[in-house]
Image (tube, rainbow, N blue to C red; front, side, top):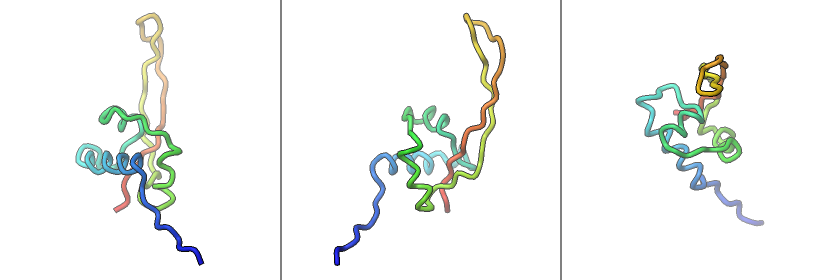
Length: 91
């Protein structure tokens, strides 16, 4: 019978987890992908981190709402509300 290889995080997943861990003090309830990009400069895609959720390492139960300005010709002409998924490490 073939031996089953034990799952290990790839480099992208390791980076994602480390960013969440390093920013726990400033973001105790977790971070959105926008916040992660803001603090790290890395734009993670959901497909590269979904396994962390299925393995039970990351929780995505929360949402964070924010309002963004709609700008046209250097003038704010309106606002748009967003709700982004919050990624938090499972303790």
